[in-house]
Length: 128
Image (cartoon, rainbow, N blue to C red):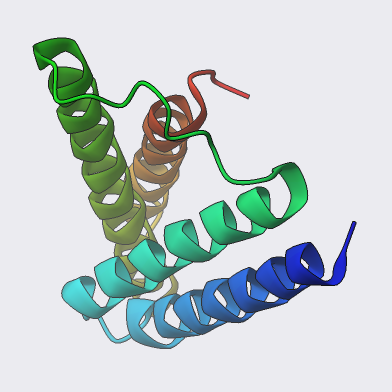
């Protein structure tokens, strides 16, 4: 791995860490939209690190066809839904901890797992 790729991994790691810091601090305060921003940064940092390790995707053949536009829209929608579901799950987790209640814990876990699966499929085309 050359220095440029290492640089992308370092930059991606910094973005990912900043995002998760926002998530951790704001989830327990119930600030959903700041948690959404944190998860969006997490996704951006994660993708940046992936590109640093595996290289940037080829832009050949990315014409403005209906199929590529529909695919991009579906992918973006999946990532957005994933981020919101994960953020909501983390806010519920904070609520569960503060209230010592088990019901939000169940919904929190389900929301985060479903959000992760949707996001991973949207970003990578596979579940794991």
